[in-house]
Length: 489
Image 1 (tube, rainbow, N blue to C red):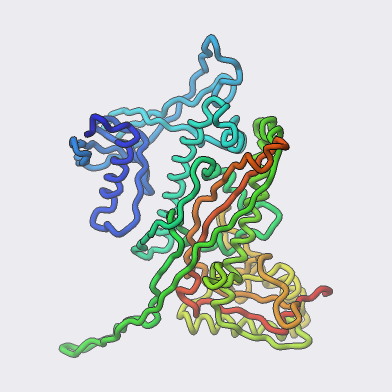
Image 2 (cartoon, helix red, strand yellow; image 1 turned 90 degrees about the vertical axis):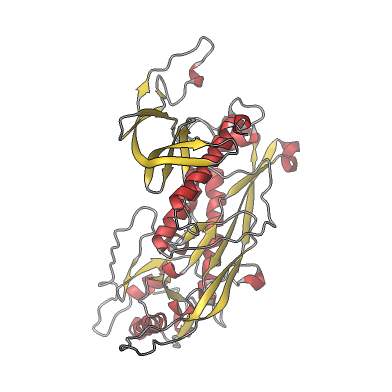
């Protein structure tokens, strides 16, 4: 059987066997391995712990047995001048003029040297190749189909690494996926966009991914999934001190179902074929198209997480519809009168959740109004408000601090609430209590709608779900007539 297996099939078998090896006794956990290179006797792979080499044997039926322990290896990159062939022109040089990335050399701790095929991502912001151009012209451009296949494998690795990071962040032990395949992505024109384009998700001029970026438990949504279900423990067990030979306390758990529908978010743009074909290196039209589509997706996902109506409306259940309200009723609101409401909000969350909050969400205009209000001593509230988190580049920065907790400006919060449609609200919550499931965004190229005008339709769609009611007491929403939007202050 192994004699008839392709290298790709052997690679899949090895990856599956390595994931079982890494899981060990924890077969319910999530572990991933990505094969970098292999021969008939050894395999080099990467996982969340690093890059390793291990020896193996494979039976005729495809059963893999590993021998010895994994040995850590490292790579060294070398460059050599390009040797042009007789028929090669300057545009066929890879990696820039006169330079080409060679295979990396990996030296194990035992002194053995192996070659590991490793190159930069297929599509990069300043690379020669355009993702959309290859997607549209893959039947006419040499190498386009191969680049798209290689890119698909790269995106699969990124997705696995994201899952591993989320599990480590939550430290929750096990999360079980049960998938009933009743939805399938389309074939042919559908493909996940490059990683550098995904990095634009929070840069376009629409509401940013604020709450979505703060949720540490963000997992890749499995294919064929129409809903996500999770049991929520409402009453837990009891543990108390007991004397010798006395009975220990007994308390059974009670749970309730927590679920989220998988929401599909989609949009498209029509562009001319000429623009796609003629966009120069480093200024691909990919940037403009995907920036607009992805920013629209970001804004809608953030809105869903904040104020979505739930399963009945085929939406994510937003945290504002989960949290406990704290009302501030005032016909002439002021900062000094609003400030105690913030203390009530924090106290109610901490008492109910038995843990402190982690963040505030507010519109920037609301924060600007409050920080310019004067306290009873005549000083603006904004003076003691700076807050520094030392966050990395992937985490949004807070506008300031409120009662010792960071406050993030979130423009996806509505400003048309209340009977008069002129109120907003502030949300105090713990993002670590939430779970977000997000698929890889996919694109479709449709030629027929604009074929008569030499244009193509580029569509982006993605699927997402979120469990926001794991700990309802960990969300409090401050609002009411005192939160009327101030147009002049």
